[in-house]
Amino acid sequence: MGKPETFGVMTSGASTAALLSLLPELEQLTGRPVVLLSRSVGAGETYIPNLLKRGEVADIVIVADDLLRQCIVDGLVVEGSRVPLVQSLIGMAVRAGASKPDIASVEAFKRTLLDAASIAYSASVSGQYLAQDLWPRLGIAGAVLPKARCIAHERIGAVVARGEAEIGFEQVSELLPELGIAHVTALPPAVQKMTLFSGGVATSSADPDAASAELHFLASPQAYAAIIASGLQSAGLQA
View 1 (spheres, one colour):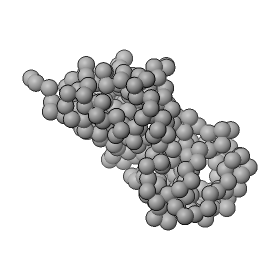
View 2 (cartoon, rainbow, N blue to C red):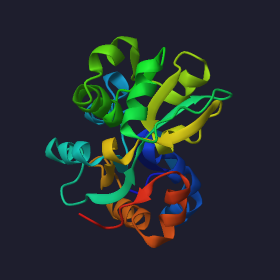
View 3 (cartoon, rainbow, N blue to C red):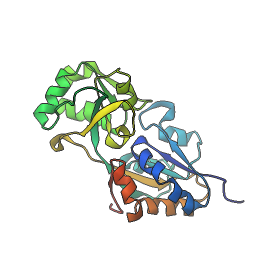
């Protein structure tokens, strides 16, 4: 049996911009077109593990490290194929034309949240951290959650750009490419959560050797510039 005509990369939104800029290099490595399958890691039908369980085919899977490890346990990703790729920060944005909110300190961050009329946050790892950990820890969950909207199937930037939320939170690399938003700012260091995203070879891959080569390219210095330009930090080949 010959190799498939295309090479599929199933990824969550955080890595999408970097992968798009690296497509020429990825296609040179595989010798065939690379199809970028940017999918949700929030919930429901487009949740990446659910897609894989239903038989959607991919060569590489790139998601938050904890989720990738679970995919290995569930037999969706090949054991031993995990490669740490990038680290991502959570950011906040407002609609283009709006003034820049002050979140330089934890107290300023709290004031901005309390003053905001409406808030949007992701259903994926960044939003889970905010709603389930950070806001309760800061003692503001009772005031913030009733005016906050969890978004599962759309980019936060698009919701903010339409004026449906005054401020929005998502991975910085997911906010930066969005049109109609401004002032993408990382959370203060004291309350920031760095998320490691890793890649692995999907068990559905018809070309696991090429998939492994692609993953190690993405973790190499040759990919650093595109990763940094997208708002991510490289994880290299760290554990």
